[in-house]
Image 1 (tube, protein in one colour):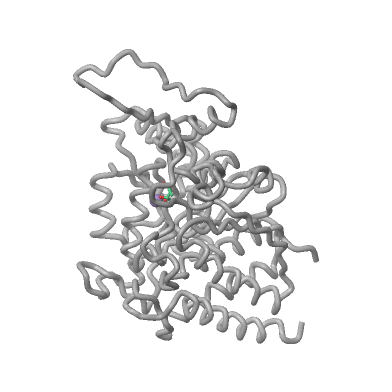
Image 2: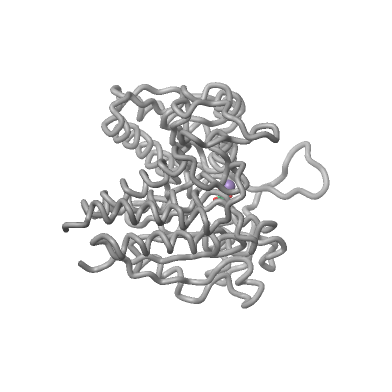
Length: 396
Ligand code: IPM
Ligand code: MN
């Protein structure tokens, strides 16, 4: 068979370190199963910008758009790496791809594995039981508060001047004012909310447990959220078999920490989703455990939620599990889209390897209370996968 075209963007800071572990694990699957990938690595990000004056080589976006079945991203963002207009250098890579490839659903699972201790108030402990934490947050990924930065990027790409949207005045405000419009559209809301309901149904089938969808917004105050909530209500009525709930973002954050077992699928506008998923990662052992998929009608991109973690860069200490779990999501999503049973089996194997690693008290990095290195954890998962793959494909 021909390989899937995989574009790898390691990016900034600890991005390359966690991506190295992803490539190690992918290689084990290529060596021991029928699946294969044609891998293209593209340098990019804020550090690349400081070295070259470009966020990534010319033609990179087109490569991601036209020659990739999937994209794997490490991390983007480096202190002081700023474009002349003050925006973050590397934004074109992460935010440009999310918007330019219409990756409107940012899927962020929050699942606590048995054996994982989470850090609360400075100590590693187990506050939540694993069966209490198993939800997926769907963050709208292309509009809202991110829109004005995306608009500036588009203006720059077209060689236009960065022209602010004209507004007459901000009554009651004095002196210097900067502002970001937060447009939320019907079309953008419909597609992401429909995605959330489809996912709830998919999980219902897979897990055999009923799944609710919760809408999180601030519709008591903002108009964009009022539209979002209204569309959520319309779509709820079209899906009477799915239980629904809704909350304002402020109360939701309390509810999330207090009763995580109430939540299954949660859908949120862009910036609320950005914030709520970092908070929710505490429930699953921290950002080192938080994986994500950016999905659109034609394209898909996978990345750990944690970002570049500058202060840990080059130390080989960060947790590679968020990235390996993102690879697992990539196997699963590609298998689903391409109807590839072998790849689906590989997704199951990687899932089991990660889960068993924690259940059996495998090596963990500092964030989970251990002292193992990034590469030791990556190697341990790779070894487990290899063993399971040998068993599964031995006679094939
Ligand atoms: C994330 C990150 C990004 C975002 C940054 C790096 C632009 O925080 O993926 O959650 O704000 O979406
Ligand atoms: Mn974030």
